[in-house]
Image (cartoon, rainbow, N blue to C red; front, side):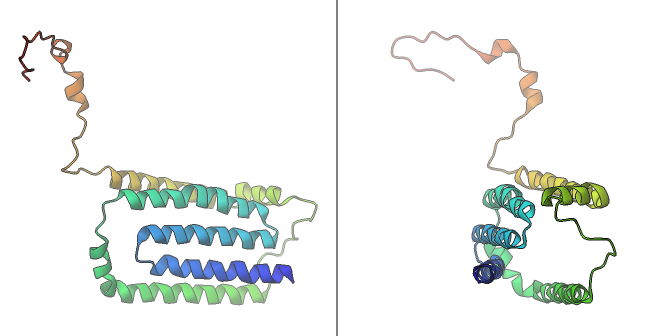
Length: 200
């Protein structure tokens, strides 16, 4: 009874926070609702007995990815009014993507009801959950795992390029000019007279 109530609580909060991620007007609020969705999804994983995936959701996604998104959103100088003005223009494309995702979810649910895809024996209960995940991740799914790491690397490089773009109100560092500077011109010893100011 308690497990059923916990499942419906976590599932409802996950769906509600995911909807608020989409419809929040402030991008910072969207990232905060995304963190709430990750925490509730971790609760669902705990109910399923997948403790390792639950800890990954909390440590990796909440502790690293979502916080990274939050800092990127706060650092970027984005005109959100201009972004919201193009909502109606991109609405048909967004509806098309939503329909494709809905069709995939319906297909996945139908395939799940049809039975297991693989014919192999299930993992023995004596094998810990982390060992089973590690054997599958670094064995059968090694290439998709490495590909996901490469995609995250490209995303990180893109975030660095976006935040370190050339801006007019910031004086950039010119390393070659600093290296070529004469040390004798770096410091000047002046002895001004009484009542005279410094002449720069």
